[in-house]
Image (cartoon, rainbow, N blue to C red; front, side, top):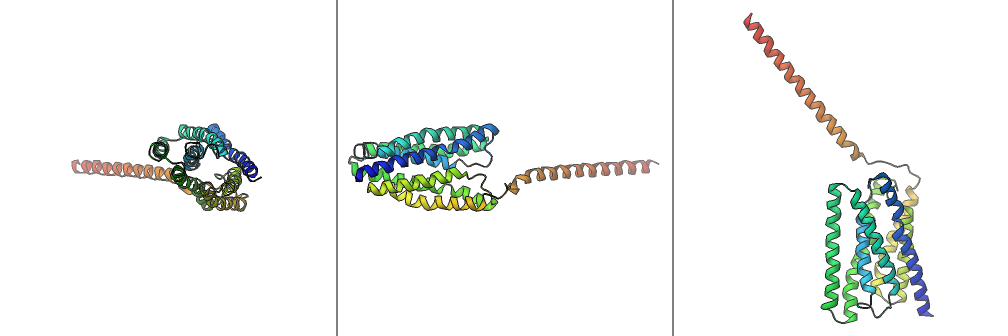
Length: 261
């Protein structure tokens, strides 16, 4: 009975996570349509990729005991493909500076995942120790993934607008986090349950903010207006300097004429 319940929760967790990983499709269809990343952040998708890579490895028989965590492998494997797709779209429509920022985040994560795989395969030789090693790194990655929307939460509080915090992303995060927490507790696996104990309250915070600010009109950030003002101000200064030079040259000409007469 206990094993069937655990498997059922795992299947529901797969469905909720699939909806979570697929939710940004609406966001990125908007990005592709406008050919602009607007105010969206790439941080949540990079950290989600980090989490998916580590937990796919964690669920494989080389780390876990046989296929005890098969539901973890399936959903995180799908998550890897989706997150890579989202990051590539974001990279394509980013500015040169934005592309550099994405590369700075993605490259270290790839190196950490590769290093984790090599060490857990060739250095650590027992399943229990492998689970502790990979699970500890996965725990940090998972908490970081659930905490990453705090960047967007800060923007929501500042602008009092939920334009860049999609409702379905927050809802599916809450459902997935709650179900995987239950799965981890039923499996007596702290590396699966612990990060979701942190993630669930953070997801609830996002939902509270959404319902608080959802009726507010879209409010643009003021700093976006400053570059034009600075440009216009510089232009006025240059024109003023040119007028001063013209006046000075006219004075010199009149003085020369007066001396000649």
